[in-house]
Image 1: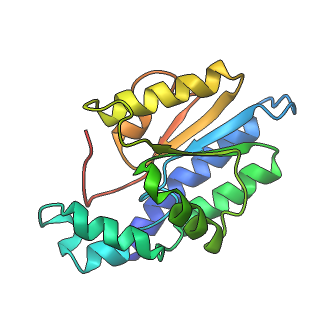
Image 2 (image 1 turned 45 degrees about the vertical axis):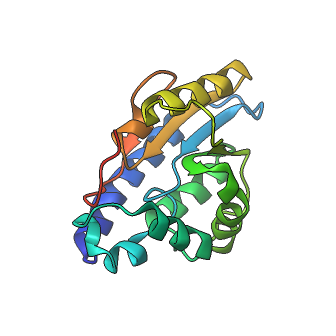
Length: 184
């Protein structure tokens, strides 16, 4: 995670994503979107995991949420570069995260401070929303809502398979590396 290999693997994925985006016949009507996950996709929690065993210790939601509230997660450089390229192509960005709604302000501020200055939507999980369902079900339902509102998902990128599986996944999905944890 701290070496060049992680960055190189991420670059392979984001380079392929940009090639895909450039190959699309975009309509220019403002309805072409790219869905990004947040944690370990656009923002890196590596500083947190470096002090908590790189995912080798049991997940502690209290400690992790305290880290999130600090709003100090750096951008993943390859994802930020892709984000900027997508905007220049006229593709709007939607952030779809499993973070809870009460972290909206800190998430938005953190995204802006590291270079993600604009987006179409920032979708967070309401505390009672899809209670008991999996991340796949939650994200599928949110992507379905986007499509029902006329958006076309050109690309969908995340670090977890739960970001990319299910329904309404878009034209193409892109999986970033994340050897630290797995969400079902």
